[in-house]
Image (cartoon, each protein chain N blue to C red):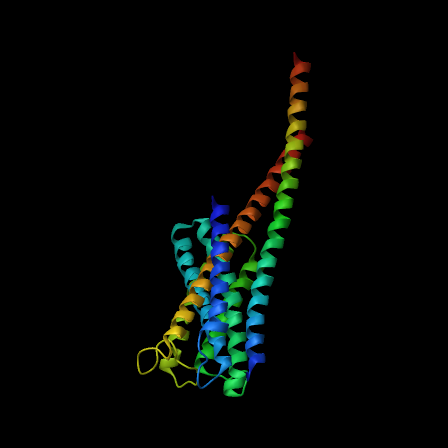
Length: 62
Length: 235
């Protein structure tokens, strides 16, 4: 079992690096998806307000 | 559909990785001269293979981006460079760990090691350009040119063991011809490791592209919200 430490270190580093890279991608994906959902909600709210105002303007002009 | 393909690729990667680990640690015989530490070889070579393939993909995507100007080639090239960098870093680290018990040193300015370090530095420059240059089409064009030029080092790394005097083993194609793996089980283990890392790279590319796409959608939505708000204020 000579040099087992080197073998263990090499494989540990490989899997740690892959795990960290996957975690980096996953965390960014989660954050971006949350941001997209927030923006979609805001956009819908602004659109609803615009539509309501347009409706009010039409009713007033009639 | 895309999500399903990514899940299937992820599961295939996991299965191949478990099989490769079983083969490396239990099935393949120990090499006579180097002993147990030679088992680093299977994942070290697999990391090198995927990093070279990724850098080759960066160059191909760069050519197509400069030619056709489609954003997908730029996105694919960027993600491939990032993945390639991760695996190229692992090649240098695992190579160094393997070198210590065999050569007695963590690092030597051997032709293959030096050309690999140059490759790592070139693509480090590529990623710095992407990080500093922002999202402009000009940055994408500059990055495409850097990606193509840097990929010229990949064949140099591959043939360096035959071109110059080196202490790095020429395992896959020896100087005398043929391969340097003494047992057929070593060849099978290497092939399974290569398949596992190729699947991993494909899965990482798919996941990373989905992330870039989500980022693009986020920026488009932010612009849309800004425009809608401006319209609201005008009323």
